[in-house]
Every structure is written in structure tokens, then in C-alpha cells.
Image (cartoon, rainbow, N blue to C red; front, top):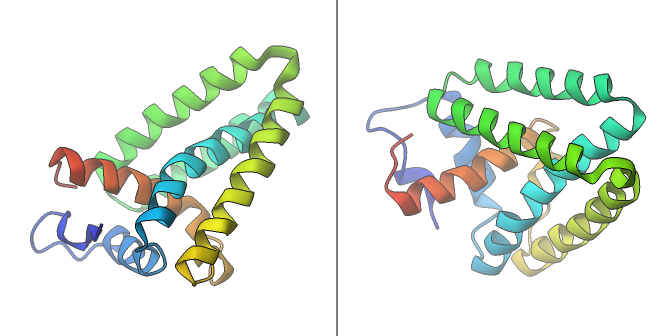
Length: 153
């Protein structure tokens, strides 16, 4: 699905440029489907792994990520990411004492699928070019959801 037509008309924001570039290596429907599942799983697993180190490490990561999303000046994405982050934190808390092994397993399995998706796609992951694309991935998943729901972002 091409997300380039989903943003508000006339918008030439950084978030639009990032998503357009990210979308170039995520055009295969199988790769997209893998990303729709794996990216949220990876988000939860990263927060869980950091939480296992110390809860404040996870909270600092979440806060730093929020600062990145605020800087994109895309309110719809910011609100959605805050909601997704709250859900991720709730899942991490629900893991209780098993947060480390569960998060580690999710992390490994989700990344295996991500690389399978990119093998199918025939293109390397965007974050190999620029680390910020690790934060753009969740926005890509949201853009696909928003496009399906007819939400302009």
C-alpha cells in the first residue's frame, strides 16, 4: 500500500518524507503484513528488555521517543504513538517477573520475521541507512492503519 497519498493535501512535512522513503523498501504485501505484526511486537519487546534492566531505563527510552515524535510535528501520529506506548507499558507490566524471557523471545522472533520480510522484498531495512528509521517503523504501521480507516494524517 502506498502511504504517500494518505497525508493531508499539500503537506511536505518531515514525517511525510520519512514515511515515503521508508515505504520504498516496504512495498511487497507480505513484507508489509510482517511489519504490521513484527514492529509493534518489537516495540513491546524493547520496552520490556529495558524495563528488565530497570524500569526507569524503559521510561527514559519512552520519554526520548516521545521527544522524537513531538519533533515531527504530526499530532495524529503523536497521539497514536502515546496510546501505543501506554499499551506497550501495560503489556510489559503484565509480564511481571517473566518480562525478560518473554521480551527476549519476542524480540528475536520478530526480528527474524522482519529480515524474512526484507528478503522477500529484496531490499535492506531502512535503519541500515539511518537509525531514526527504527522510530519511523511504528509510524509506517500507523500510516497503513490510518489509510485503511480513511484517516488523514
